[in-house]
Structures are given as C-alpha cells and as structure tokens.
Amino acid sequence: MPVVRLHGPLRKLAGGGEHRLDGATVVDLLGALERARPAVAGWILDERGHVRRHLNVFVAGDYAEEDTPVADGDRVDVLQSISGGD
View (tube, rainbow, N blue to C red):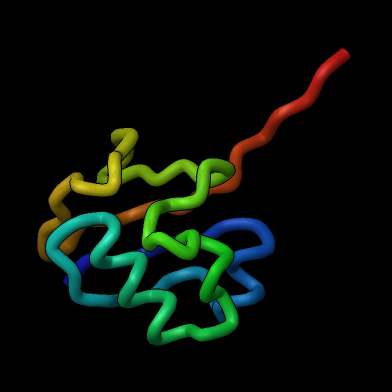
C-alpha cells in the first residue's frame, strides 16, 4: 500500500504525517486521503478534483503529475510551494 507523507500545516490538519491508502494514481490516492481525513478536504484537491496549484507532489522522490501511477510501497510526499520576492 502506498504511503502519503504530509508536511507543514497539512500534517497537523490530517492528524499525522503518514497515511497508508489505496489508489492507482496520485489523484486517486489524494482523493482517498481527503475521504479518510475530512479535515484536509479542499486543502489538497480543488472543487474539480485536481491537485491545488500551491502543492507539489513527489512519488519516490520524483515530481509527479495527477495521473502518475503509484505502486505498493511508494512514498508520496505532498509539499506546499514556497514563494517569495525581494
């Protein structure tokens, strides 16, 4: 089963940093996370079911898209983007 690892404020909202869930793709897995942990609903996926633009998702350390497949034992990290200026 893949493991979703949350960082920053999402970790606290979800009641912990690591969550084992079923899903065939990144978006399937994150949808399962939102159903399992309603406190994060809307913070990860938007109203159309797409990953919010301020988040970056990595599967096994590589940048991932919504349709990136996930396999048993994969680590899926969800990180908030950091931006700034002068």
